[in-house]
Image (cartoon, rainbow over the protein chains, first blue to last red):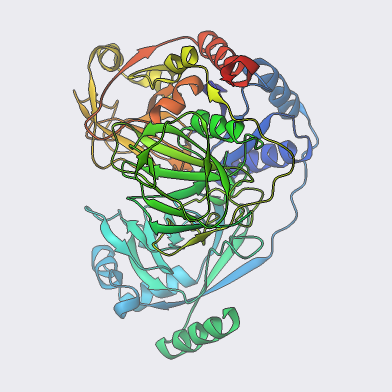
Length: 228
Length: 313
């Protein structure tokens, strides 16, 4: 545990990306949700840590650390609900995924094989961060692991599906970004008017399904009509 | 109460209250007033709960038309406000009559000026707050900065409200600090001793690429402990992050909830309102303090912010 600021505590479980470490993050997150301590204002989970933000006029580090130690010592784990699989339709390549060919070239694969590998795995939502609703998904199959772009794009269109290292993710809003873009989904990933605001939550499981540009257009149109 | 019409929005004007906590796990930071002390005092001057929503203007203010009678207070930075052309003071309760126009100019001090109105700005709360979070388009007026022609709804208020002003003897305490006090960040121990010394010896300049998400500083580069990034983790408000170039970034109210740059230091809570008043080209320094001092400074600040003697009639 580290006193990250005068109003936060960082609880770390390990500096590696692994499902086992992340299971401990999710377990503590659930326990904190079930036994909230007055004065805790926000919980920010990541790959291997949770940042606990608190109101320094209502709570102090020592009491919070004691509370967390108590929760960590509990043997019985708060069993998280078994997540269903969220399916995300993606149109790969072409204008939807401008970096698909380069990824294929870097890894010595046919572009179609990159798509098959990306859409053939089930991914785990480690956490949301960077921008509202951006889910960090892993782990990417090794043959398509690829470094991020050397210089980030000024603007990545909303819905773009990118890869970076062993991670993949979907840009929920138009934003600058440095991940390699291999496709795009017509789904809205983040909507402040919707409850929950984000389509994906920590711990969810995700599968990508390849769709044609025609299907992309039809889904986009369907979405537009239902939201207006 | 009658609404306020936006004749000119100013450079970047948003509706803010004390923020929306609790959605960090969706990537949504709290937002809220960049200078919460100024917002709270403005609300007290017009008899509102201190967390009511008000207008936050940045560097250059706008022009506003009152459609009905209103009690208002202007706090924070001095943008040279004038009501129907007559200069009006900050830090005091003011009356605006129907049809009067309140016009602000450019900053004379500080980065953010607040217009609080009796009844509060009554946009619908989103997830418990009226604050505008620009990165997600949440809250405020359609989640965006004000535009010309916008109409700001004002809430109802009952009972009398005395006309008051901030005790002139207390105004000195409200002057924004240029020396920010910091505690060690979670990765402080990763930096070499020289790098850690540097942050308290060298001065830094606030650059133009600073906004509500973060203040980018320029000065002596602080060498990060390694190339590239670390594994992403949650970022605290006020965290002093060191990206590969070594130029510090202070994460601020609309911050990215997670980040992969090592955090060398964290600005103490008592000095966060001062961060909200920093302008591009302002020079700042950092001075390390203990967590115990950070806490007692905050408790002390909170006592005078809440005290009855802060406001005089």
